[in-house]
View 1 (spheres, protein in one colour):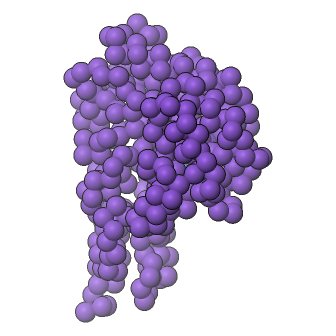
View 2 (cartoon, protein in one colour; view 1 turned 120 degrees about the horizontal axis):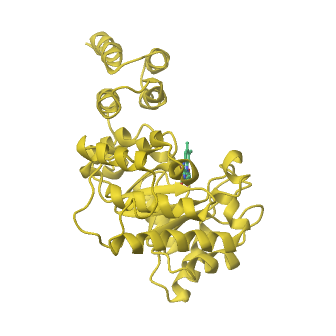
Length: 335
Ligand SMILES: Cc1cc2nc3c(=O)[nH]c(=O)nc-3n(C[C@H](O)[C@H](O)[C@H](O)COP(=O)(O)O)c2cc1C
């Protein structure tokens, strides 16, 4: 999730309880392929997060090809194409959920990514593929700094698509077969239309119908449902009823890296994890500004007396050291 599932958050989750599979934030292929080295930051990861999938989005097939090759070179376990983002700046350019309106283009993009994955397995190098030298140098530096972990072997990576049930109206009867025709390895669908953005509820009845379409297609594609899962029990029930192969969890993780362990933490445990998260953030991104951490701190500081005051203080914090002081003061008042 953009702005949320950076390397620090994923590492925290993997530290508490290894999640099944983690996804990076989405990365724009056009920017990356043209040499925006800073975009590689979203691809930083640690070994304990495996299996880890890199998510990419955009519209240009050649940029998808180049970005998918870089994903292979960085050592990811899978490549996911975003065809579900409803943000205006993405969808208006025909990317993200905008691709639901252009099925031919969507198929061409999948083909490009699959070709990159195949070419990588067959031994192509980044320079042979026309990747800009500054990107190749940056990737080598990330490897040296142990920010990525290229694989020794060149096994074929799974290529997957994450999408929605339609744009204005549901269009799964045509859209889902369009995707399945491309023999993608995994299909994840958020049970809302583009127009709905995040309003209303995710429609798990439609996700159940998609599970049928996938099954009847006879393809080997795994199908993951997505939308509004609140906890493990709820997720298991939704998957069982809709007959999906699994689910993706999004917002239920905000301030709740315990999700996969099923644990309900005490307020003190929440605060200690808030601090650990802030420390991991500084370790992962030593020269980045601290403010992207603040929203997470706000999500942790909930459900106890004094939480509102603490949230306010955290919203002005600028380092893990300051977070430590805020939490320490709170703990002293509790004693
Ligand atoms: C802040 C935010 C950022 C998101 N960024 C991405 C993204 O980069 N890629 C993606 O596939 N979905 C993204 N999503 C959508 C979620 O992955 C998920 O499909 C959606 O929130 C519904 O699932 P949930 O109810 O479990 O949150 C984002 C959602 C939010 C709220």
